[in-house]
Length: 406
Image (cartoon, rainbow, N blue to C red; front, side, top):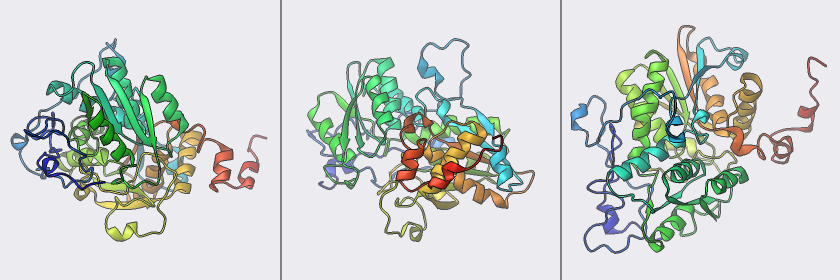
C-alpha cells in the first residue's frame, strides 16, 4: 500500500483532549482544495494531540459533552448507550487471595453489547454536528467487529447505509448481528498486514474512494474515540466509585478506552495506577521488549494490533502486561460461571492480568476492571467446549471434573 500522501499528512489526527468534534478544520473527510482522491490515511499516523496533564481545559479545541441522567422512557435505543453498571467481583477475588475490593465495569450492558457502542455514537454525532455526515450517506469502517456493530446499530436507527470491513478471524456471531442490523460486510485475510491493500484498513479506504458520499469515521485516528471515554465513561467510573479507586485495568485495541479513561483519572484521581493489557502477538505494550515473541496470531478478538493506533496514548499507562489466549478464555469462563457476568474473551484478558496486579493492593483499596463486550459474539468459540478442546485451551479431563452436588 502506498505511504500516506502529502495531502493526508496535512490533516489533523485530532486532539483527544477534552470533548467535542474533530471534524472541523483539518478533518479526515474535508479534503484540501484540489485534492480529488486520498488513497488512504495511516491508522498509526503520529498523534498531534495537545493534551497534557495539568493543562487548563480552556486550551482544548474540543466541545464538552456532559454526563446526562437517563429518562424513564427512552426516545430510541441509542439512549441505552452508557450508564453501564459497576459490579463487585466476589468469588474470583477471594479465590485469588486479593485483599482489595475488585470491581468490574460491565460494558456489555450497552445497547449493542460492547464498549464500542460509545465511540460509534460519538463519532457519528460529531460528524453530523460538523455537517460531514448527511442523510443517506454511507458509513464505512474497518473494525474487528464491535465498532462495526455499534455503527450499524446507530446507522439503522438514524437511516445511514453501513459497510463493515473486518478480518476473517472474527466470529460468525458478529457477522450475523451485523447482517441483522442491515450492514453490508466485507471480509479480509486475517494475516494481511495493516498497511497491505488487502487488509481491512486498505479495503475500507478503497471502498471509500469508490463509493460516492461515503465516509470512514476512522476509530484509529478519530479524536471522538478517546473523548467518548474521557467525557463519559471515566466520569461514570468516578461517580460509581465516589472518586476512590487505586488501580484500573483495561485491555487495549484502538486504545481509545484506556486513553480516555486514564487521562481523566490522571486529572481527577492522580493516585490511581493504570494497567494496560495487550495480547501476546500484538505490539501495543511498552517497553518494546514485552512484544518480542515469535507468536503473531491470537484467538482473542477486539484487542491488540500490528500497529500503534494514533488515538492510543501509551504515556498514560503506568504498566503494561501481556495476556495469553488460554488465560483469557479461562477467566472469561470463570467470570460467567462464578460471577454470572456474560462477557467476552477480552474481558478475560483484562481480569487475568488484574488479579495479578491487584495482589499488591491493601484491604481498603479498590481495583476496577473494564469488561468490554458480551459473550453473545463468541457462542461458537470459547463458550464451546469442543472449540476449546480443538484449540488446545482445554483437556478432555477438564470435562470430567465431578460436580460437588453429584
